Image (cartoon, rainbow, N blue to C red; front, side, top):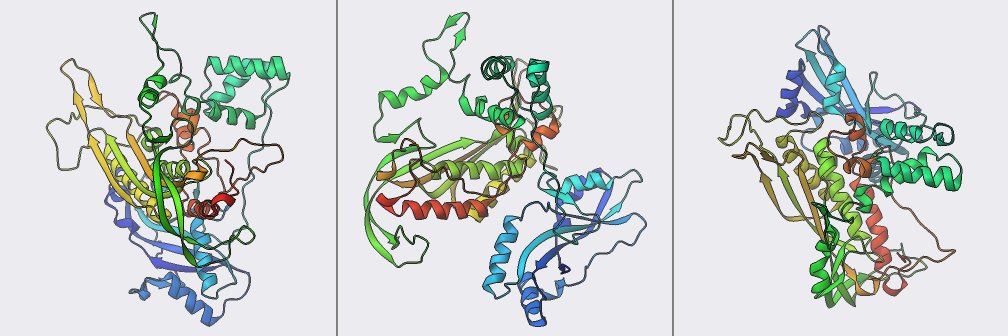
Length: 507
């Protein structure tokens, strides 16, 4: 069955940032449109086609949607560049679109992917379309389609796992893998893994094991340095940095219920009457009427920063800063419910176009692998808000700081590596505060969406000194957000939590 295509006029080309950056590499962006690539199991009749076009077109501008493209290259430096999600996985957008189609009776539609088409013109004979493509797509989850999407049957072969030959080549094999894949192993890591695999297990590790160890044993995850001994001028300090942070809680725990041993903290709440759906453990997914229930809820609080990812790729970095923090809140105890969020940003001098400020030093240089402060501030704000909107979590307060200054001593004082803070407040049934110890025979269930090779290296990469990793590996280490999938996961957790004492989640 051939694919069906609908085109809609877009305003992607009107972005001031895009036109400016395109001009710098020798291109003028003339126009843009989106293309809806539709796969169906059978013929779509005239009536259903009318329904489908009604769904895809703008309500007040139906003339801007057509079964034929609005853009065409006229030669003489003109070209059409089309980018869309990779075909290995169905996108979250497609899943939602197909659900809407099904609700409208269009049950034969199985997948809809949206591509973006740009009409560009060279203004320089050396201008490369590949460079323009880098401006308009995420090369990890999307790709360029020179001839459009004719089928969803094209799949790339995943990279196969292999063994790392330490038995034959020694520590050099681990050092080489760490450098190539951005695993961030230091000499102590390699000493430890050599002892475990070569001396104790007497076998070569797999690349899968090495990736997993890079994340699980990174500073980001384990806090080796933060929890390690502090030595100043040869004298061992009485407390670690982590012990100093925990000290106020240990001395005055007050109404804290959870602190420093779960995915978020919790404060003692109170009993109240709430509306809960009637459901049973036998049929938990069946709709039921709401009824008043007396519950004893605590307040959950969590906050984290997502600095390294937001410096490399601000929009997806902020998306997953918010998404990861939501995940941590949800996974507190035996399950927690999301309520609201806060956000905070700290960046260097903004250098706003046409608005020079006296303290901004034009000679300050920034790492080429990191986004400039203005882009970080705009894209991070957009990314966090976009994720919250799609998930359904309100952003209720926040803060912003921008600073770059040359001290009298000549030292530069600036947030070159930005700070992106994401915080959340939630609620949790007091009976679900304690995680249960795992027992033999219990099930470990993973829920969520498909994964690209993204975020792999994140823990390791964010634990490195900025600039120590290859730019491509840094980019790959940034996760990509999927708010729609997390909302679906949230419904599962919420349904379990609302069962109260019959909650099947143990930890």
